[in-house]
Length: 469
Image 1 (tube, rainbow, N blue to C red):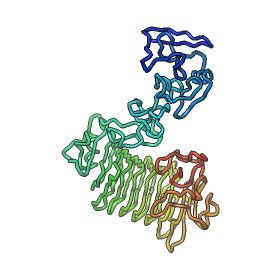
Image 2: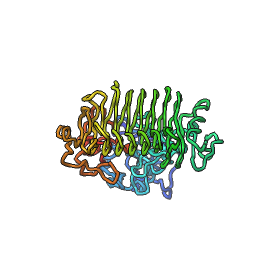
Image 3: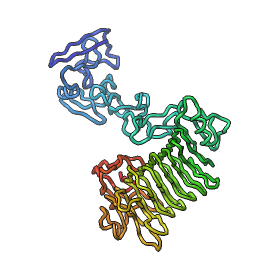
Image 4: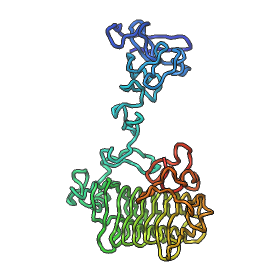
């Protein structure tokens, strides 16, 4: 074991061991110096780390060597920038430059990690692009098939423990199973929910594999979080039944599901808590979502589209609707009948909805009350085909309403919002809605795709559900 202590210009070397032979790859001497930040023990002819007291190691070593290096030649050796691979102790050379890049990659650069073996703890994955250890960014990366992707969660980016998940698989499952592993999945999501909440202690998550579930799922006084794999569809065909619901003090959270009900509502919250992330409520025979006394209703990154009677109907209760796309419903996009204490509708895209009378975009319970912020209101039409966007007071809107448009931040009466088109409501790079929003008034720190807000270039918020990166 060796150690080197530098105080000012004084170096004290403590040596224990035998001399390193010239044929050894770790050999060093005056003609074969150590990498930046390492000291050569001229007794053993071996490089070893320096411990610097009262000085910045990286800065001191660079100044003494007379060069500042980076990229594929990050190591300063005798005044010359070299690859970390050319040193006798590659990882130690990189660690001496910066504790955040302690590994020598095959291209000679110093990186935070080369593969997963260099990462651990809450950040077990090595990002292939940045070579930095990170948490999970996709469900498929986790053994449990669920990554905590809940926005602003304290455990965001952490894989959920498999022991806290029950599994459903419409194709390969069997409701005679308990669903405690992916290979012993139940066939229906509702059966998995019942199993999860009935265990002691209860499991808090259900994972739904790709497939179509003819389910009606919900909770009554219980708590559950359902996460769907890509293409997990809940399609309720029973007469008047809703696809997803929560009632009587229950708490239902869903992410990455597609919900549709042939003659009911896509989602229904009654005296409970209902949260949906990146979920589609589409093509239902009644409304996309109805809420009565919800505590609260939260929609984030959701799509509500093609529903027969309307988009989101809130008869009472608090709600937060952010980063969501509410389009092509045969009724008012967002309809509030009773005023509530806490209402947030920010960074949404509301377009191409139609209704027989009144406003087609957003209706407030108290006409003229403040509601939409950073929101696109476009081509929402009432009886006779006229544009009628909202009877609320908004801020930082992009609107084509001939009466409200000129007062909006972005007037769309003479220009289009710049949607990609063909059913895609993301913004093109030339959209007039880009960088025109506010970062206050409840503006979220992510967008419809859970990409960051604001953009990294100008640090300004876009109007609408999409943030152009």
